[in-house]
Amino acid sequence: MATSSSIVAQIGGRYAGALFELSRERGVLEAIEGDLATVSALIAESAELSAFMRSPLRKRDEQSRGMQALLARAGIGPFVTNFVLLMAKNGRLFALSAAISAFKDLLAKSRGQVTAQVVSAEPLSFEQGEKLKSELSRLVGKTVSIDAKVDQSLLGGLIVRVGSRQIDGSLKTKLDRLAVAMKGNA
Image (cartoon, rainbow, N blue to C red; front, side, top):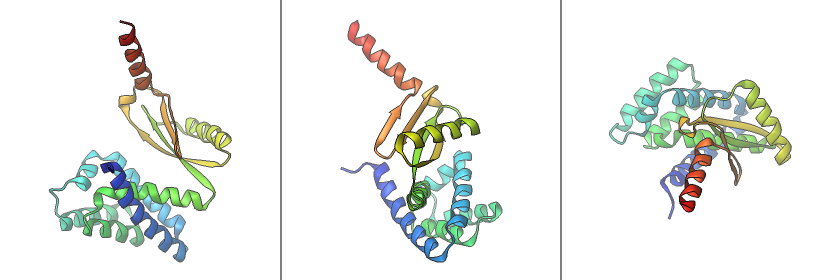
């Protein structure tokens, strides 16, 4: 049985694939990459925007109008604006973040890169990000780009996923393991 997150990833992947092919044909991959990075940052910075996009109570035309106003104010180009509005029109705005992530993966793959999903308790500094990229590139033998997210519930440390491999060095996981081990000794 597919989980809801895998279904969202599948939906996002289909939209991303279409956007990637069209933008590659038109030679605008870098422009699309920049606009999608801006949209991704807007979503990451605003819990209200994220909730607005996921809300089943919002009508599609209301989501379209809201997103159109936001994208215009952010200076997003017509290609990405039309992409986002198509997702809103089709009732798929909840999968926008997954589509952006899938687009990044397709772009990285076309460049011979891999993308590492990194979740940390606090935002990574530029230096930390560069050091992590360098170390991951050495480990996997390819150029690595980082898709970083923050989850304060980790308390400290990192969770890094590259392809199917995951390294969980979060303090939360270490404390959970310690609690299980201590219960076994009690």
